[in-house]
Length: 491
Image (cartoon, rainbow, N blue to C red; front, side, top):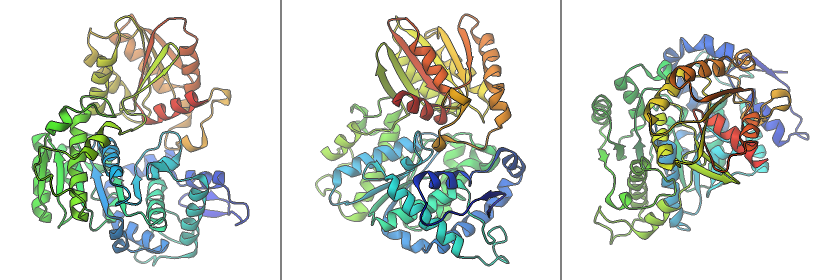
């Protein structure tokens, strides 16, 4: 047995390693619920060690931060919209292939498969490549050591936690596959995020900043914006959407501190008239940020068309990229028979607001409307209350379903790649959150029929057994919920 943090994990023989083994090993790096609760109180104090430790982990895998310069990284942070911004940026840049021969994208979280987090040219890496590269990183970390007088938390047999390991894996995959453009979405924050060992990004993007991850980033917009602004690098232009005044002032201060040119991005006039592939009004600002990032990236690499000096114009490649962008689980519509599924993994106050507004624009007057909702870690009652208040009297849910994020009804189990160990299993089994949500919704709208169901499969089955001719279902509150629902619909 090998000690991994506070967990034990069996050694794999080189002959028996499979994709399933890789997923099991990766899941062992998740922080379990009890441990997470214990360390959360000191998490912000531990932040100062994050970047030195990440550089050391990278060294043990065989790289230096300077090695990553050749990936030509576009680095994106924010609270809401950073994933969509990455998707738009990729879609635009993909129109410049083969000049950009291999474009890698590193994002989180995943919906159905962890391989979604590490994609090349629009496709998640294969199971075979994931397995091979995973165990190459695993073995290098097992076979190397750190100076424990400098890195006391990185002793023999210890592995980095889940997200850090995946970040290391993405570096190794992109370097091994000779990626020449990479788009990196920050995990949490920026200053201390594991992606922030990048030294020379081609462009830095900051999407809308709001209150989230307060135990790690701070409790005010100024503190959170300071943290997000940590990905700015001297010599690289930074682009930000319009922010609330406290956040903007904090970003400006960081730009001065780092001697960075910070540019505020409005909605681009061409973008405002373009039918976006990720079809929602609020996506126009994320698409505009992506336009600035893609244009700057191409300029740095010497590929931006010289005849497009007018900032109010866009090359046809940009427009095509915007029209064909895709980001599953975000403003996604799936029609199956008489049921229209409207999916958005919104899980913060700001994202719930815009996702609910998006649903309101799609709602049919004559359709039966159903809400499927879950949020296991944040203030779920507050989120569902916000959702209800935004819809007001204009859109009414005939039924609401509160279910857990467990995928399948037989045995109430989770798909291996959707396993989340940082929740209380007892609370999930007892459906504590779901019952509380049902009680909250009764106060908000006693006319809606309320259902509490143990799994996502149960919720999907319930909807499909309804006899109504026209049904619209909003699925929101959690990307884990949306991901699990996509898995069930695939079945």
